[in-house]
Amino acid sequence: MLFPSFIHSQKRNPQTHMKDPDMVWDFWALRPESLHQVCFLFSDRGIPDGHRHMNGYGSHTFKLVNCKNEAVYCKFHFKTDQGIRNLTVEEANRLAAEDPDYGIHDLYNAIANRNFPSWTFYIQVMTFQQAEKYPFNPFDLTKIWPHKDYPLIPVGKLVLDRNPANYFADVEQIAFDPSNMPPGVEPSPDKMLQGRLFSYPDTHRHRLGANYLQLPVNCPYKTRVANYQRDGPMCSTDNQGGAPNYYPNSFSAPECQPLVRESKFHVSADVSRYNSSDDDNVSQVRDFYTKVLSEEQRKRLIENIAGHMKGAQLFIQKRAVKNFSDVHPDFGSRIQVLLDKYNAEGHHKRNVKTYTQHPNL
Image (cartoon, rainbow, N blue to C red; front, side):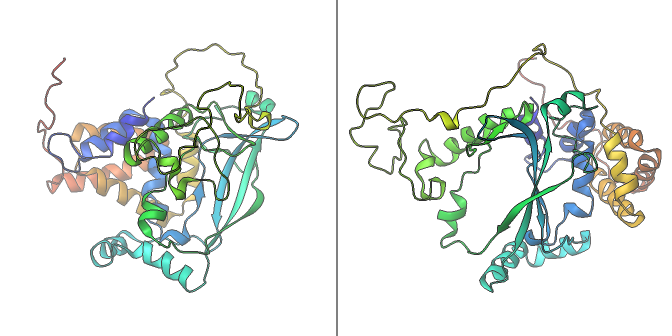
């Protein structure tokens, strides 16, 4: 599970406490499965023109289960009804200096003026039988399900029609968590999702306290909770009074609801640890580069990647360029041309030692 290491690589250097291109590109270059997301990040869509003009994706594969206990795999998509709009690097740099709250006030003002932003909610559906026969792992977070094979099915709308009454209470204290699933939605075998089911509530307990689920923004809207979760610091309710705090019991205890039990599923494969680094990590990235992006968009993607990578050491640059060349020779060579220019100007980091030897090695 590389989720914690991925997060660490995007943070500050543990010795210098500076943003470090070495850390970012070292991790990405050593894990070529990151190519798809990296290309999306450094494309035009990596700098959306505020929150209203970007899509949202569930990314992970989930399960949908009906009242007959029949399950299918699914992916969630929120497509903006305002249309996709992006900023150039120059515009983003200007706004970062002049108006760093640009995205917040654009969204706040739109809602305040009753120009309510909305997103159409779609799902993709894959049966268990289709998943067994599909040419790649359908639970691989780094890949998409092609729309031609699994078309988007419209389900409904998400409309933002009210601004927070108090930013701290309504936003800072909110605890989004992929393990909070309504009945009928369940996790898939997606390994990254399985890790996040633990990681998110663990982080919330650290950030907001053991009883973060009692905060109004994290509670059911009009339902009184009845469970066996009691005590702990910052308890903000009556702690469910004198009701039994153990299960099972012979008194007034809430019972497990059969409707919300996890659905039955079949397991047939061997359980082991597998190295997925040699999977096909380039085909979908190649389609994105050659078929989705225009030439102007490819040019900006290459400029953005090279502009960010120029601060990394040369051996890391070389490894990363090799990965982009595996996607398409044109892709890697054009990045290398720009890096050669930047390196000649002295932008790359010299081979300085920014990490101390681990004390236990």
